Length: 295
Image 1 (spheres, rainbow, N blue to C red):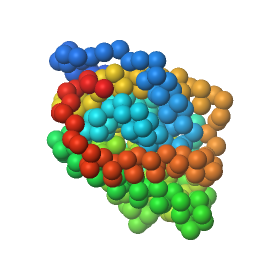
Image 2 (image 1 turned 90 degrees about the vertical axis):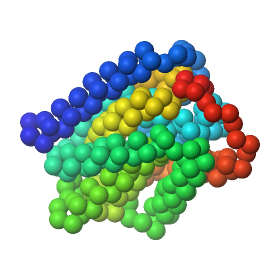
Image 3 (image 1 turned 180 degrees about the horizontal axis):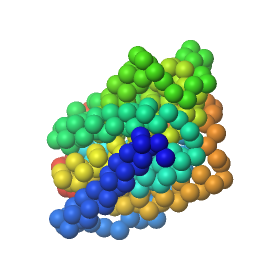
C-alpha cells in the first residue's frame, strides 16, 4: 500500500478512536442524555443514505431540524458533526478503498480540512446564536448559488483527471482548509469540495474518496471540541448515529458510486430552505439558553 494511503488510514483510525473516547467521556459528564426517538433514527438513515450518493447530509439534516424545530440553532453545528461521524467513517472504508485517486492529494486535502475544522470548531462552539445563524445562512446561500451555476452549465461539470499538480494542487488543499472550517458552522463539505475539484479538471468520481475521507477526519476532530463544550443535542445526535450507518450500507450496496450532476442538483434543493430560515431566525424572539442534550 502507498505510504500516503497508509498514513491516511492510520489518521482516520486514530480520529475514530479519539471520537469514541471523547464521546464516552462527554456522556459520563452529561446529566440529561436520552435515547433517540424512531423519527431521529429515521432522519439519520435518510440523510446518510443521501450522503453516500454524493448529495451530502448536512443541508438535508439542517432543513429537517429547522422545519420541525427539533434542535436549537446554536446546537445544530455540533449535532451534525457528532451525529454524522460514524456514517462518515463507514463511507471512507467503502469508497476510499474502491476508487483510485492520487494518495498524496488525498492525504493533503484531508489533512488541511481537519486542521480547518480543529481551528474552526473551537471558535464556533463559543459563538452566540445570532452569529451562527447569520454565518450558516450566508454560507448556504453561496453553496446554493454555486450548485445552480453548475447545473445550469455556467460552471464546468468536471474533467478526467484523478490527480492534481502545481498551483492546482495547492489551491485544492487551501480550499479544503476553508471548507473544513465551515463544517464547524454546520456547512457540509461535499458540495464545495466536489465543485472545486471539478473546476480544477478532476473527474467527478475522484471527488468521492477525497470528500468522504475529509469528512471522516474532519468530523471526529470537530466533534472533540463539541464534546468538550457540550454544544450539541444528545438525542438527535444519537439518532443520526444509529440510523446513519444503515443508510450508508443501503446506499453503498444498491447504488454503487456513480456520481451524477443530476444527483447533486437534487441535493441542492435542500439548501434554500435552511438558508432562508437562518436569515429569518435572528428576527424571532430569542429562545432560552439550551443545555447540552436538550432537543
